[in-house]
Length: 473
Figure 1 (spheres, one colour):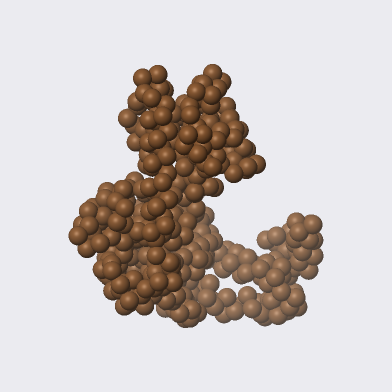
Figure 2 (cartoon, rainbow, N blue to C red):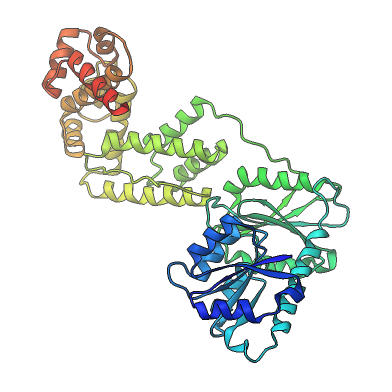
């Protein structure tokens, strides 16, 4: 018995459909009614429903919103749309979301009720027969030359899947994972399937269509797992919104990248801070290739970019060189590269706001990086200016204008900032910390620390750790 739920905000419509249609003749039974989408979802939670008839225009939650939620929660549920007028756009959206049919209310008086239910019953039987034709995932593919996978890079997308861009009973289709499906069709129908999937891909946000070859003599489970692995690894770098159809071969084994070495990460950071990549196309391309060559997983890449942004802003946020805005999320390397490109433009604009040449700006940046990387060394303005081949007086003037602090003020600032990290995150003694930030005299270090913070190092440690404990509690 097919269990039916009727959803409409008009009580008379619900009662009329429930009582007037010959449900029993088609092995159907109305088990419930709901006046809006939220009540319908509550009903679906409480008892099984095979077929839901829903209005599109309802308060609280529209029929389209209900369909999106119901298809995601109950993918086996059949949905028929009730519409007051034959609104083409609404009907198309409903069919795209998986509705198996629609009924115009104005036609109910003209159409035979038996004909309406007969049409719906046939459609349900067709879908059931089609599903029964699917081979088992453990079976080997011997008939299909290609497999097509339509995937969205956004794994959290609220898209209602499964989707039905085709109606051919000769096609087979499986859900690979959330927002990812695969299809196959006989050779003479492949072109038709490809063009329909390509057309539908335009409606899938961040969507890509994989055309997979070398799929024969593989089990459907192996094909499914290959798609999942490819989506998790290579698709991130392969995706291009302007060329979203990607030809791939199952003979190319997809695997997770090797864990990057610390020296590889440090090399990228040095290129970011020390090479003129923001003003030179050759250096820019080298930086991009360094990033891509590591093939970092998304989480690793996000961590690397975050550390670069944090370090840059720590160094330059209060200077005329400006700060970098971080992207909060990305779904593909295309988005990452677009962010890097925009960042280079922003940095270049900030550099151009100064009255100094790019060579001088780069020299000051290099001096800062030298100081940051070797805080235990006693750097002087004269020593660094000689190393950079700039006169001491000119270097000091440029440094103050660009960084907003004199060289000595900035040197003390970054040493004390680093000592704060040691005080809060290690149990090392004060003299050890003093040496690590370039002070051989512990008392002198404590005096400088107090001048800049108002606290002795021991007081800062005690107060900071007390705040941490309160935060945890």
